Image (cartoon, rainbow over all chains, first blue to last red; front, side):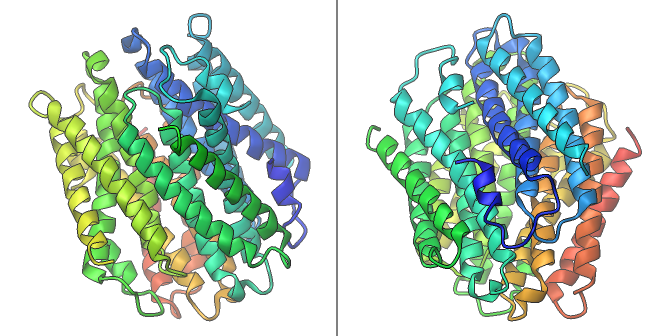
Length: 132
Length: 132
Length: 132
Length: 132
């Protein structure tokens, strides 16, 4: 199941590029899950005291990506300003989380995978934003 | 990106059946997205006044599935009672949403797909619950 | 602003005890905020390695309380089974979080306050559940 | 229970204006609850077909306010860019929801109260943003 399948059932035409919209929603959903799991895996490391900023950034990123995925999944009463605002906030948050996780990527596989999910999400949101 | 990839990076052994845990998280994530999109597609229908219970049930299901996916994604300080409680609540909620969406499935493709996502999620959560 | 003010504006009669419903929503909202803040305050402690279970339980409790507050705030298409299911899950989660925070309450003021918020929420949810 | 009580327990000094930070978190929490309830009250109106944009905007505002309240409640590893990004997105979203609800405020008391909560939240977030 991907976002594209549900977007195709919306009863009226959708203003946005459907391929980029579906890609952004899927990237956001995947990033939110990775960040939730990475925060928890950091908590499970013996050296958790070195990873507290990573936990926090992960939690922020999970929350912002979840909210952004929900806003983008709604097509009724479309408001380009709200869409632009949440995409911009989400890109900043994903970039911060990716940068933090990349610092631990060589030591912690969860940070390496999570950084990739954040970069993919930053890119997908940026490509959608460029079409608005 | 699926939940299994992140679960494999958790620093210590995981108490639960990993295959069923990953399947439940992925089903929950997919169900939450379908329900958010189905609630919005119902709002976009001319006959929205006939679909208000469906919108509400979809919103509940999206919220409960999102919370359950987050709880299951965390492995630190595992508490079987909390896991059991949220799985049971989620199964009841998915069942209610599936039953509601199934009533509109012949007329609205979004309800048909969403009902399937809810049934798949109910099943995946049930299979994980059976192993606790 | 409390939940009671919004509940009073719902266009048709509400099936539940309004006083207990409003008290539960307000307790859930307060508990979710306390748990989010307590998880973060634990991360900010030098002895964070001793508090990882507390962080995790706090995060679970924040997520489950947020979802439960949303479900209870919706009156359209009321489903007593879903309401009962989420209340039961929330009570279990609040109880677990309160028990964990109580262990650190003498040393950490954030755990002391958070434990109180969890116990208040457990109580308010239990009193609402008893009326269903 | 207000946000100020938990902020006062954070183990190290907080970079932001504590009074404005606590006011913003409390306004966000109240706004999220009002928006969830207003979306549902709109669904309960006979004329729901005239209120679908209001429902959608309410749901977006609830999601963005919930995420913003969580980000602001975290003080560990503070990142001013992320804070600024989510505050800006939240202000745009609150303003859009207030403007939509104000159109129905004379006819629907839930929209009138919700518009006030959105304007109060927009203001509290703006005052915090001005201090960054």
